[in-house]
Length: 503
Image 1: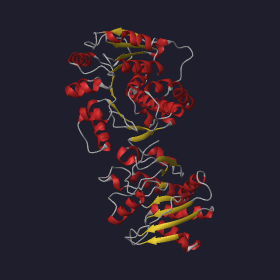
Image 2 (image 1 turned 90 degrees about the vertical axis):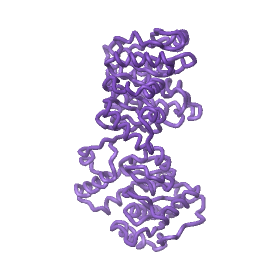
Image 3 (image 1 turned 45 degrees about the horizontal axis):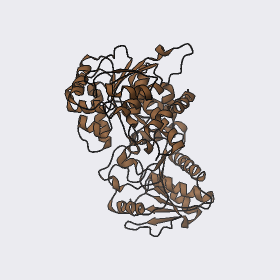
Image 4 (image 1 turned 180 degrees about the vertical axis):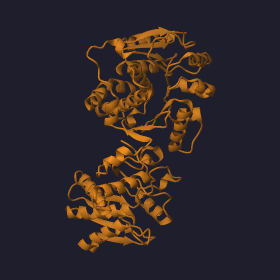
């Protein structure tokens, strides 16, 4: 699913209106009807709603929703904030339609006016400001939003929470109206997918309002969501007459004294991700641990408690390095020597990234199309600080293009960026995966897919998607609180089975 900018969404609306031979009012009615259908499937008939409307088209959506809720038997009232002297054409028309039914269904609030003493049982629908927002709300609207944020009522946002720009993180994200649910028309907005703004959205729901598919398919965006269609298109079904050699060898370089759990998790995940063979290079102190915990894997050792040389990797189709290796001088030298020699893409995570950040000259020597999997702190150590998470992602795009690598920037909505500047956001996964070892599992999954012949961008994309989906399966069974990294590995089979059904 493509992610469009606010201007692209506006153009898509206009194209849909022209191509379908409908009016902008008809399209607004279609959007309001879809929202009311969603609301009607989730709220009892005696639910009471107040709808907060602005003077633009988002306010027009809110007024139309108020009318449709009333017609379906709900108790609903709109409050129109007189932000501007003039209403947009469609907002004005929907105000007239609502007033024609009953003047008491809408109240116009003059600047400086607030709503107080809203009973707890009333559901608040936010339709004050829409995707066209490109500046901070004025003082009154900002204060109004702050007041609504203080109440604990259930809140829904129509298309986007008020005060949130679609394409950027504002200087003051605290001025965004915080809701429980966001009903977004047709597309995700980029601001939904970044921590500073996304936490105001609550649960995201993409509402299909029938925007023109020809425009959507023909219009390029560098940003997209990894959805079922994309994941299913990447996934390769097993061939009936294949053997373990068909699916390649994954070579995992991991572990040190006290950190053999990281190695075990990465190796086991590579096995579960479908690699034909998995071979681990670990220090001698972890030999019995790995042979016992992952009997399916081959195991070679180097060094006593820490790796001092990376060897015996020749012939492997994929190499993953970093989980638990530490950053001792001998290990750092071993990684630098290996990068000098290796010509195939490498997956680098954890301590391998910490070593890179201490020796930034190695970035220029990385094999083409290597995959780096940093979390935000690791990324900052590698490439420097940024003002917010969206700026961090844009810096990741720049660095991916500069070094001809892929970067998996981990987070609530992990993003994978390519040397071409393409960005894929992942929406599987849950907060239960914020647990030690989860990143080691991801390294193993991506390396296991790379071993099977997936291109690096696809291996990273499918790996992140399946990793998150496995976490969701585990959380369904065990809860987010009790989820540990090993549970993600145990649920990989369920995740791959689901992806197999997409094909």
